[in-house]
Image 1 (cartoon, rainbow, N blue to C red):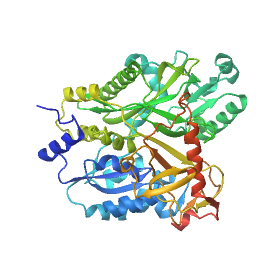
Image 2 (image 1 turned 135 degrees about the horizontal axis):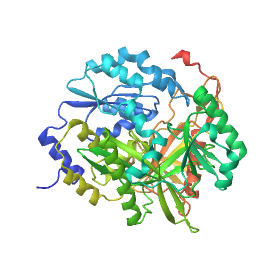
Image 3 (image 1 turned 135 degrees about the vertical axis):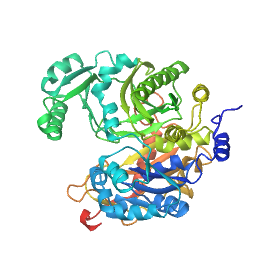
Image 4 (image 1 turned 120 degrees about the vertical axis):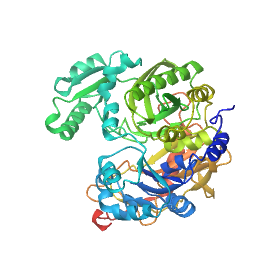
Length: 505
């Protein structure tokens, strides 16, 4: 008998015959509504609850899908970089309208968040007990994302960390000693962080003093006793791979190259910029090494109570020709990851079962055999696709006045030509076409926090079939794609405008 997961086409036939997803739907909770698309391959989306919004959401989720979207940005008509306002207060402010919408949905409903939060858990278990929660709790996430725990457990798990990695309370951290030990620079990571917020690169006394001041303000009285992980700065590219704890084993995804902290685009060396699956530059041995690490971590996670999708970020070293030498684990992301929201589309384009299916299979306890998952891993091909986030550069409050909408585009010289509607890479027909999507500034949107303005706000994504990293130095964008990012940012035409109070929403 053939495996039900030998292809996406086969899975859809089998799941229909067995009724795996019949009379069931998903509520997706995340930062960007595009993330709901990764589950749309299998289930209707009953509702989306998100921080951000975008012109593509109006067109493709609300209009085409007929799915209600509850968005902090849509309500406030402001985009800024303080996610805590959405995470901590949105459900309290909008629970009645969310519950009213869900009351109209028939059948079983699964709440699948990008990551958990205490306010979300309170909503699900106290206000909406009908929802089935398909994610790990905050306690479980925090435990496994503790970067100091990873350092303690690395040998037990059997995964590589940089040989000179160390743990130290902040009270014992000395820049002079560390810079002597690591003359190329070093990295300090606090136990818990998201989106690069707790990872700091230090190359000078000024960098060190800035980090210490920020962490004192963040940690307060616990600063001195907080244990941090310290590693040398490694000059190789950042790699990422996603796995899924499912039915007692681990499913894996194609690895990708992450572009992080390109100084031509962002000021934070730890800021995530994009991912490149198209480069496919790993040797078969390097690819297998990444997969083995993912499987070891997944089995350790599963044996300690974790379920579903997770991601692993890797550090690397390179030789004088920028060829990879060593691969080390940087951190575990015990949740869905940034690549998840578009990787499912990249996988579906190859008729591969998207990794998000295994997340559903784990929580629904579907009959997917371990030997079929092992065969899936062994036969997994690379996929095609890259995504890059375009951030704002200047501090202040702005409107996008260029009239750019989501869709399929191409460049003619330095001209941006819109070809047709579209919002996922699968809407393109060849590698000369690309998509503008995921947060496209919409009419009446003010970009920037009203009290202090913002810089480095995500404006829009470009998705392309091409590789976007520099062909030699994978840490940065290629010259072609740096130019393309600047052309699209210029086309948005950000113009200064009066701030909008968050009290207006």
